[in-house]
Image (tube, rainbow, N blue to C red):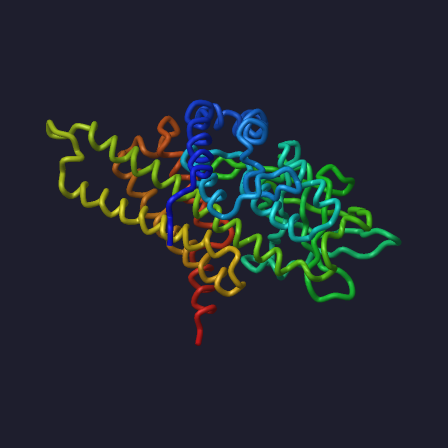
Length: 374
């Protein structure tokens, strides 16, 4: 298999990396997360108009470039390396994938707006009692004349405070499966309870109190949304695995650089063999994570079982690596590693959060075991 990037993919990687290195300031992004709007809209618009990143993996029919898994991997790794908090994975990867597959006119229009950088979309799927099993949703959409009335609650909707639209999973009367609904965030009856996550992202718990929706709010086939939602979850998991690779590369480089400078007993601590062994172990974990991220990304278009196995292997591998690399980097930096003055502390929080997004490490270990039963 050829793992070399094409000229176009290299240009995408280099252009995005250079832009983020010069324009994406870590202190500014954290200030926006804590005291501002929760994100930097000018950065989002630049990703759309200056770099074309928001449309790189979306179809040409909606204004995108029509790229595939490799383009997505290049983008997410660069975003992870710069610790970007803007909701790329939630809007472009997860919501974008769902909208592409449902094929409704409203979805097409929304995809065009995502590519243009004028719309943020978040998936509301997890519920207080469903745990890892998104398919066990109890939110209900019932018919009311030509429209629908949506009732229920969702938790940990990442990007919801920034979103203009929500994609909401719900049961519908007369079917056993899940349906997918498009809901304007400012609709009457939508109550969001926003908060900032440990890794400085915007999220919310959302309650739907008899939210009235038009007939066109139902996306795709009634009761048939779960296969697409399951795929979107795997796509999101694969994307954050690639993002984690970018984070871990940065963390390793910063840790090696620090150990070359920090003096102890009159010499750099990086010259101590015991610490060299730790950094070699970190390097090995990074390389295994790179291979796992490739495995997941390049199997997103495979059959359902192959895709699920590849994603679970990657998520479990990277969950373990993220924990090990994050903890080792903080320890090698000493007490400074936990402060917000150093970037390493922010990367540690992000690597910790990634272990729980789109399924925990334990969940994916169990899912892989179930999928490989003979």
